[in-house]
Image (cartoon, rainbow, N blue to C red; front, side, top):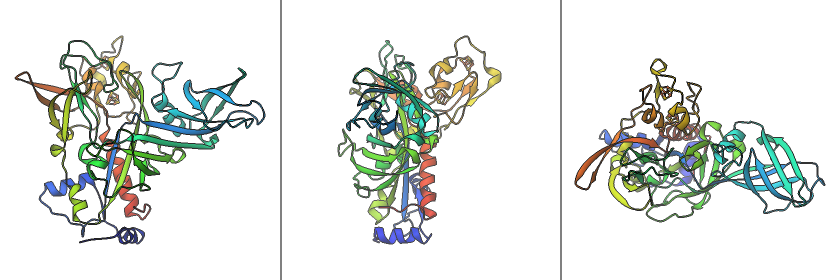
Length: 415
Ligand code: SF4
Ligand code: SF4
């Protein structure tokens, strides 16, 4: 059976569309069902994780027009941006770009991702600009005061990723782990949401094309094209959306061993035009390869596992306060990449489900099933605990459901 985008959108507008998330489709297939294009109009996908290629383009009024000629440098909450390209001569405002990976000059654990979350949450931020004459211009603003706040993901939501281990006895600093990764073989870290991942369900980009609508942090945005470093085997997406429409739940800062990063959530809609498109969404975690590489050097693949690492694991930790020993230095507070555990309180809304707390607390006050991975190393089988997940399956599921519901309610047109 073949359908057109127009027919699917007509169904959506009339409130008659059938939409399922990619996980729901996979579940049906695992239960022995054989869904066809006749049964399903749209499959929604989702992912949430560290997206290092994220930047924001802002236009910010900082002073009265005529106050200064042109900004040379600018800091937002201590995070450096790049003024321009437009000089805004004598306008009292600054156009700038700021990276999600930028580090604050004042606070080592704060950076672009945390700044974006603060802005999208409506918090007031401090602005410090310097013009070419050396004058300092200070002001404060919220996102509402910004003329423009457009996010661009230059390489987002890779189809699949690599897992990392440290086979050496030296600790390794990397963006691929929340803290320095201990070795030898003290755990395994990975990214990607497996069978729910957007491009895993549309690997040849049959249904996503330039101009396709999608959700970025629950703001309706666009697919601009394939992102930097995208290849046919490992594609990723270049995407954009208005930050003023974003939901702070889906965006945030994440501290890695190499400094602060940004995480985003992305959901796409796959219009099911025929059975071939639908069949791509049958893929299950166990069939998606996940190479295991040495975290040092990144490219030496040591073994293979699969995205079956997401099967039967916990989305979130539980904290048993009675077991907490109130250690002088709390390793969880020290290591939690989203600052979800502060002053012996777990803030579930900040939690990302990475698992670092359960891996780190020596007294078991944090419990979380993150699974294990077995790998062969020099003729020996090693079983490693998943110590850090740099993707959040819970937020990915929530956004895929959000998009599904928008389609069912006639609020999101595909194509
Ligand atoms: S490391 Fe564990 S036991 Fe110690 S203070 Fe932190 S949560 Fe409590
Ligand atoms: S899983 Fe634990 S370490 Fe990770 S964000 Fe949540 S509270 Fe922090």
